[in-house]
Figure 1 (cartoon, rainbow, N blue to C red):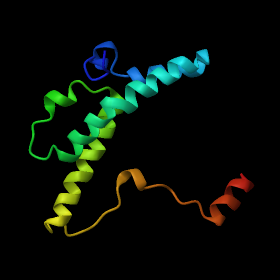
Figure 2: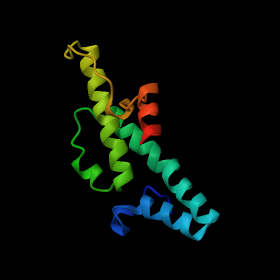
Figure 3: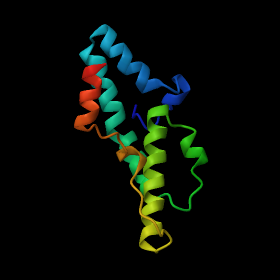
Length: 117
């Protein structure tokens, strides 16, 4: 059956996270390959289409079928799409960096302080 037809959230909200942990513990390449196929195929495509084009749609029913990993991707994609629309229509006066891209920059003085500790 297609991974779109099966509601993986019914099995576990953390389906993919638990699967990755099991792959590492069992060193099971077949399980890893199966998870990759389930996630990167039809489910991922449907997720991207929905978050990139779902502007005025009610996404509550759709999001109820997502696992935790899929839901995080959906939320970030949906938010980014909304911010892009606002930017195009000039509703956004300040362009801000995405939360995903915000990372602490380590300076040479930080490295020196870490070496002393």
